[in-house]
Image (cartoon, rainbow over all chains, first blue to last red):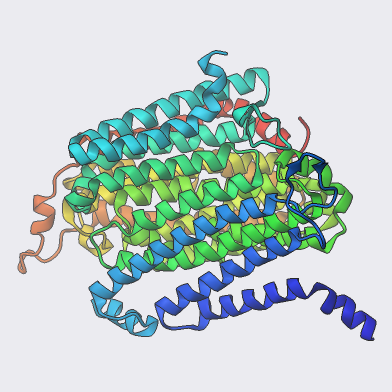
Amino acid sequence: MIESFYELFLSRYNYWMAIILMMIGLYALIAKQNLVKKIIGLNIFQTAIFLFYISFAEVRGGTAPIYTAEGVHDLYVNPLPHVLILTAIVVGVSVTAVALSLIIRIYEEYGVIDENELMQAVRKR
Amino acid sequence: MTIINHIPVLLVAIPILASLLILGLGWYDRRFCYPIALITILSQFLASIAVLLQVLDGGTIRYHLGNWAPPLGIELVIDSFNGFILVVILLLAFATIIYARRSVGKEITPDKIVSFYVLFQLLVTGLVGMTITGDIFNLYVFLEISSITAYTLIASSRKPHSYVASFNYLILGSIAAGFILLGIGNLYVATGTLNMAELAVMLPASYHLATVHSAFLFLMIGFSIKAAFFPLHLWLPDAYAESPSAVTVLISTVMAKVSVYALFRILFTVFTTAYIIDSFPVTRFILLMATVAIIAGAILAIAQEDLKRMLAYSSISQIGYIMFALGVANEIALEGGLLHILGHAVMKGCLFMVAGVIIYRMGTSRLSDMKGLSKTMPISCAAFALAGASMIGIPPTIGFMSKYYLVLGAFEAGLWPYAAVLLVGSLLAAIYIWRFIEIVYFGVPHGDPHGDDHKNATAREAPLSMLAPMVGLGVLCLLFGIFVEVLMQAVGPAVLLLLGGA
């Protein structure tokens, strides 16, 4: 019982953290009425994915994959997921920028950033 | 090394440079923007035809970026399947850019025109990149390039509601992109590679792993949201109806098609038919959802009062037809599906162009304002009728040919009830297309006593630069249907490639 609990949860706690963060992010995206909070939720969701990538690349005791005079260390961390996530972070920042500028436009146009009030304002026009 | 060997990378690199050039010269003088965009997309289109002919002649082209061989470097792959898609999307992009000039002048404020052409060019770049890349993470990057530009383009309309439409699309699009990223991560965990060809080789060993199943589901759901496959279509009607007409034409024809292409590519060449039929039987479920999409999309389209919104819901129905091919997954049905990717792009492009022309001349897209429109805009209405006939599936149009292949494919697989659904879908399409035809041809401009038919009186036929691409696409609906054998030379090898035969 304890072993299986350990096997399922504790030895893979990094994935569970990513999943919990992802759920928090998705919840905020769907349930929050405030548009800015939705975007915060989106950022949490994206960060969870980044953490997932970074944590699966980790090797215990691994070093950076650098060639030294003695050659490469035989246990090193795969750098590729880090590079991928660097790209994904840039994408995430751009999406956030576009989203926030859209919220500014919506606020200028309708004077609200709450989704329900926004829907009412849209219907009124 | 001649220039012809570098066409794959030039297809992506030239438009990126062109978008910078548009930005720079447009800052100096706004009139430079349009010719640069036009020339770039025309040259891309011609290059794509050259590449397709080369592929059909001499087999798949693999281009290693920076001469790094695939496991380390990124490769661009053009085979008969994505070569065909490439020609389709660039044909539509070319028609749209011709059309865009007048439409943009009317629907977008002058200070945004430079950014419009820059973003338009980048959107086309992203979609071309998605089509020809052979690396699955590269696919994600190009997907995000096209998505971010699409969000901004949708919001560039003068209508304030477009901001809300764009925001909703952004939320759903980002969730989709997040799922796709997760799926790619899971695939990388399972195999340790990101190259599509290598993934296809290495995945069969781990078909039983939960990692692969979850990767498959994440990718499937992500691309289904991007392709607006029912019931993940909620972003689509607003995004299509509120954006400027030229943008609607581009995203409805090109962008949805590229997402569907990516889905086909992942399902058939990364996961292969062995996985989606035997290891993780998902095709029957897709088939079921596709039939629901066909019927529900068409019924929702019938209920609309706004022309653009009606066409948007019709798109949901038509995506259902393409996914139907994926669900049947035999040779004839897939041929029908690929023909429908082309056919739907051409006819929906034409229909949205007509809607845009009506907005251009009359400033409205409400169906009730269009009574008797055929008297003032006869050519536009005729183009609509032609493309509409193709949408219904009246022979000898391309719409008929693609549905004919789909029905044959369903019969061959023994799926009689599903084939019947296709016919019902066509009947429903006839209803919503006929509504427009009846209003414009037989409707009497109402309310002479109230004097509110002045809109119709002032409306004239559209300017030539909008009329030409519209009529061109309408005629193509007919020509592709009649000369379908020519298309089959490209579609046939593409389907064999999807099914793993060639």
